[in-house]
Amino acid sequence: MIGYYILIGAIALVSWLVSSKLKRKFEQYSKVQLRNGMSGAEIAEKMLADHGITDVEVISTPGQLTDHYNPKNKTVNLSESVYNQRNAAAAAVAAHECGHAVQHAQAYEWLKMRSALVPVVSVTSGMSQWVVIGGLMLGAAAGMGIGYYVAVAGLIMMGFATLFSFITLPVEYDASNRALAWLKNKNMVSQQEYAGSEDALKWAARTYLVAAIGALASLIYWALQVFGGSRD
Picture 1 (spheres, rainbow, N blue to C red):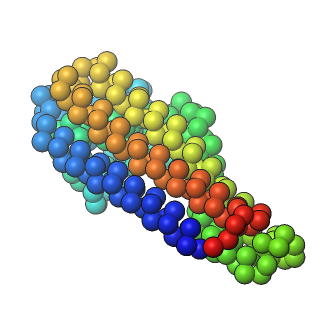
Picture 2: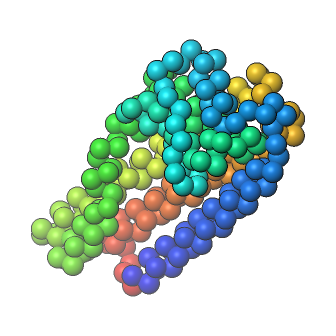
Picture 3: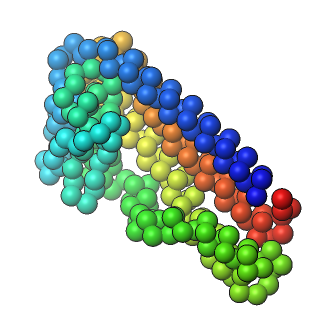
């Protein structure tokens, strides 16, 4: 187990570093005021209108960096700091979340795949590791008995979560690309504002990349334990 704790610690450290960098970037670009004077909510509403989307509502949600698009009730949820603010960071986040709404409206394949996995992952992700550990305690490493099948079931659950993490990557990168293209093509931001928006979204995407790598590393580690890898 020592190897696992080292792995988790390393991933947690990288995740913390990237998240801290992201927060600093958003603080930095929150000081770059938009020349057009539009708030995040107004940016979002205009991007939706420009794409002919009339059935999606832009609403404010509590918290910081809690922005998301909800395909179930078709709402773009913007944190209070994004909804009301008029800066490059707010424009980037608002446009990014609208990018997901555009994906939904255009039936973007990767988004459809991710949405299909949500019910499975929401049930299995929290218990998968414990199922694997339970299987190992029942003797899974010997490659036989009920413990082996329990552990394999846990690995399958973990595999769904890992797959979800990797499917999320093209969804997030595509949403950012759509957002940046719209901001640029519609002359919504100046060159300086665009650079800030691009940099902020780049660091946001890296948080998903770290999460995906962490999920894969964890899956590989436990698979090695189940299928006969060296044990600490």
